[in-house]
Image 1 (cartoon, protein in one colour):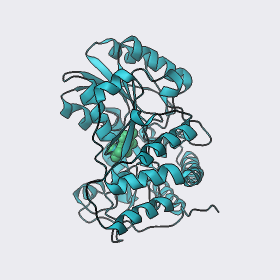
Image 2 (cartoon, protein in one colour):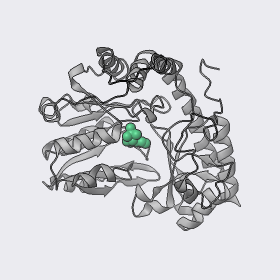
Image 3 (cartoon, helix red, strand yellow):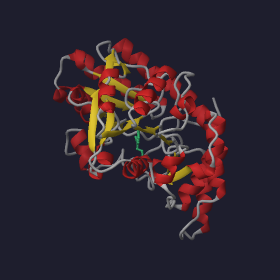
Image 4 (tube, helix red, strand yellow):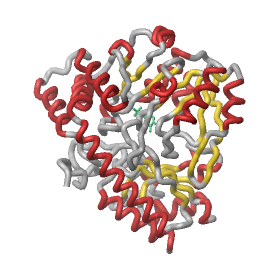
Length: 394
Ligand SMILES: Cc1ncc(COP(=O)(O)O)c(C=O)c1O
């Protein structure tokens, strides 16, 4: 047993102070579980936040701020930028200068800022499908969505190079949103893929917005290498982890790294509107929590492998790719020959499991795909697999 207890069951439904959206009982949940009265035994895996307590140094840092008792306008001190630079250097061999960092209140706001400052209204933003949801980051900014389907070889997704290049060649499409590793497919792009994507983008002046919020989650000893490391900083905006890595999504905090001087100038100075809690949490996370992240990743490897192995063995019709990175499983129910409603009835109605519907991530095929975040203690993951196997084998 390691130093940290990821097996602890924490009651995020009833415990005062939880305020968890994933475990709350609101209308959205009732719709997901196809009922007016939410099942008390429901298990939720649809949001990418984890049911593990944060690393102790982060909790201590937040307590210090709380105990101080004054929450006025706050500064983002040098210690913050030093901590980000240290993390990027030690964990990713990426040398970053403090002036190349911009902090935003979450990855979405960083993506929106990149779109607003580095593209024009009317531009197309290229998004490989399946994808994490960026609709609200693109459409309300007056840009349009230019998507293409990736190739799916039994759950192993790769770029359709012709489709991607055709979109990049259209001068109206000026940016692409990439992810390393990719949500929901779990792919880590190889060096060859990174070089090919970059060449096509640079040949056609397409900005690369790299949303790498899952960058600290390699699976099974894989290595996650940000695009900048492979191809240099030109035309790249890198959005780093933190909210996902340390389970701090509710503190709304992300760092953007831009090392291309022309892009940095266009982004300009950003007033860092972080709460003192977020600032203190980031400093503690990036200076004192390496060991916690390493133990967490070892735990996630075991959990993810356990779930994938059992699904492969006990539900062979379900296609699930063993993710190279992230804790996300992308599940293809095609071979069951069921409608989307029948699949929902099994998952939510019978098993009382909450998964993300793939419809928004992979139109039009996504209605028969589901996404599962393996982010709960192992005993909970076991119960979830038991229920899914029972429901689909019935
Ligand atoms: C790839 C990706 N980008 C962005 C986000 C949203 O991040 P934030 O809550 O920091 O805006 C998520 C959340 O699941 C994600 O998986």
